[in-house]
Every structure is written in structure tokens, then in C-alpha cells.
Length: 559
Ligand code: TEU
Ligand code: CA
Image (cartoon, rainbow, N blue to C red; front, side, top):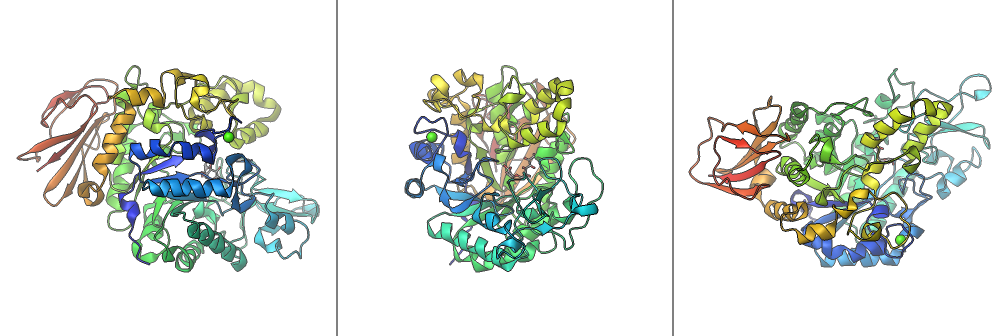
């Protein structure tokens, strides 16, 4: 099987199925809902869909807790619906990337149900069980914390031992050191590829290999234990094995979710000769406005640019980047990376698109980003649905009321719920998402921000995305060109160029909601120059010293 590496030319659209489109009025998005919107996706021009988990799940973490890897969640439909969905995608030239969540299962998975029954159950070693510390073993085996807060261990009465869960207690970690577990994963990956899926987004894949002996982690604020399971001792061997046994036999692609990944590690994961993953999601830019990855920190453009440039220069010829601002775990990018955009929502959203999608790598757009959806003005803590928020509230316990306004304020900025409010299709009831009662709050701004409106407006964010995606298609400068940043210290302007065989792409982005003077770089000489993308009506035909308008963004091809 020849691997065509089609992902280098692909624009990928992420669907969070629960919030995309509800076909049957139960208030929950579903696969038939996706089928109903395939033409919308085709018109947008995207090449592939990354679908967040749609497998059977008790939904403690909205499908990231899987109880059966080979079947579809009841609320989302059936395997037949899935097949129809894939066929419909393929007919339209759209590939499907499934979410592969194999660091952990649900505690309701049959393997775990068996595993907890007795110490000699054949499935016992599928998970990570340990005796506790202290008198009677009533203290957790080590000090690792769950990514959702609290200890990463839960005590189980039946056998008097603890099991490890790096996420919620309903998400027990699989034991990848057990060859049977790795075989199970290979089999289920093959199962979906044989059914027609085109690749995988590998959930928290950097956590699957834990250090032998599970030593205590060093003291840290928030997350403890990281150094013993992020890029753990056998990670590269396990990924190489999965690749050689299964992935390499298909023309598929993989993208690993890689929180904490460094440039050198990313090169190891994605180097083409290493046969592990094709690409990874790094996290540096989406943590550049946080403290301890949790608390909000003032956004700084130079800090963001430094991260972009580090990855553009650093992974060149050594691996392959992923380009994203949003996903189902991140707050919305508008406002976050633009400051208060006031009346310039459209310009700001288009500028953000230019700022990232002219870089080298595989671009991702998250549902709603293409119409400029924003964070949701949640009114109180009960409106949040995310298991992560429930954990936070658990930890605060009866002290919650003391700091409730602060918590609400932080969550409004940072909560994952911001990305998960239903897709805004129209200005009609429930934003056209459902005819029933939506499973989660709809952002009240849907009357102004919705797909219907965007399709009618020739100047909409959506129309701009269509143009940008079409421009990017089969564009060798964007795909292969070298990257060079201008004015790295500028606090308002992000300016970079890409160069390939005598042609140059020149990108100017004003991140400020204000007029900002721009000076042309001295070494820029050219004979002809073509304005390809502009969020202010294509009226600056030449690159020249000028005053950039609020959030103005320009892309030129020059020769
Ligand atoms: O995310 C892993 C992860 O690193 C995030 O959960 C992060 O810790 C969190 O967003 C705090 O910012 C993946 C999935 O994308 C996420 O939805 C799941 O909840 C998680 O794994 C567990 O499967
Ligand atoms: Ca439904």
C-alpha cells in the first residue's frame, strides 16, 4: 500500500456530534444530522472530517469514555447510519477521521467490568491496579492527580485495590504494557479502517506508556505525575508497533493529541522514516494565555508569534505541523486572541484565519469557527455540562459559594463548554439545531451569528473561509514553502512570508482593534504582486507602507 500522505493537502473540519445537528428532535446531535449537512461541508470545501467519538458510551465525558469500541452510541444512531454517513462523505470527496480514545475506556466497558471482579480475572491486567499505601492500604498508591482534579486513583471494594485514571473515575487507564491490550487496539483500528474510515485523531496518545513502578511525581501546582507518563518509556515502540502492524497497510492518516509535546518529541512522533504518527497537535499556543494551563492570563501577540515561529522553523523537514486555534476543549478563538473586537467581529475572525492557515501544516477548523461563533455568556454554574466543571465543583465543595463569582468568571473564559454550545444554523427556534429541547445552552447570539445569515452575506466569515480553503488547495507555496517571520517583536502586527521556487507568499495581520502603521520590509523586492486574500474588500493592490485598519489582514503572492 502506497501512503500518499494526502493529509498534507487536506483541510480538516472537526465535528463534535452532540452539538452539530439533531435530526430527530431529542435535543442531541446525531449521525443522521451530519448526513443532513454533508452538502454544507462540501460547499465549504473541506477535505476531511474529524469526528469526535461516536461509539457506545455512558457519556461521563461526552463519548471520551467508551464502553464498546465497535458500535455507535444509541443517541447518535446505528452502525448502518455510520455507513451511510461515510458513503455520503466519500461520494463528496470528504474523508473521515475517527477519534481513537485508547488511553482509557469507560468503567462500563466489558473489559473493566471483568477486570474489577477478581485479582485473577483474565482481564485484570488490562488495567492498572495497585495496592494502596498506609495502614490497610487506604491511601492511593502514588500522588498522581487526575487531569480533571483530585487523585488519579479510585479504590475498589471488591478486591480492595486501586485503579488508575488520569481523567475521570469513570475513565480507567488501559495497561499498554500488556500485549493483549495492544492487540485489542490493533484489532479495533483495523476494524474501522476496513469499514472505510480514513484515519484517526489519537486522544491523549502521549500518556499511554507509564513509567515502571509508577513513582511519585514531583511537587506541582495542579497536575502531578506528568513526567512519569507523558512521552513515557515505551511510547515510541508502542506507536511504531501499531503503525507497522496496522496503519501502514492503509492509506490513512493519524494525528496525535500531544499535550506537553516538545519540538524534539514531535519530530520523533511525526518523522516520516520513523513510522509512528503522521502529525501531532501541540498545545503551546493554546496555553500561552494561561497560568498552569488553567487560569486566564493576559494575551500577548509576541508570545503567540514566538510559538508559531518556533514550530514553523523547528519542525521543517523533520515532521509535520497541525494548525488550529479551536477544538472541543478550547474556548472560542474570537475574543481570546483578538481582545475585545467590538463591532469588528467579521474582520477579526477572518484575520485569525489568515494568521494561522497560511502556515505550513495541516489546518483544522472547529464547527462554528467558520461563522465566527463566540464564547457563551453562561449565567450560573449549573449551566455548565462538562465533567471537568463538575470535578471543580466537587473539589470546592461547600466552599464554592464563597468564590462563586470568581469561578463563574474564570469558567466563562476558560470552560470547554464554550466550544460545545450547539451549532448555530439559523435565527429560528433553537438556532435551527433541534426541534426539541437542546441538551445544552444555546448561545443567545444565534439570532445574529448563524449559517443561514452567513450564506446570504457575500462578505461573511463563512464566504471568506470558502475562499481561503480554495486558495490553499494544491498551493505549493503553502504546502512546501519555507517560513520567515518579519518584525517578531511587534506587539500588533504578525507578518510572515513563505517562499517556494521564486514565488513568495506575503502575509500581514493586524491583531489590534485599532489603526496601526505598517512599513514594508527593506529587503522585499518584486516585479509583480497579486492580492489573494483581504478582509477589507481587496482595495490594496500593492504592498506598500500604509495604515492598517482594525484587524486588517492581507495575503499577497509576489514574484
Ligand atoms: O483531552 C485531553 C486533554 O489534555 C484535555 O482534556 C485537557 O486536559 C483539558 O481540555 C483541560 O484543558 C482529550 C479530549 O480532547 C478531551 O475532550 C477528553 O476529555 C480527554 O482527552 C479524556 O479523554
Ligand atoms: Ca438526535
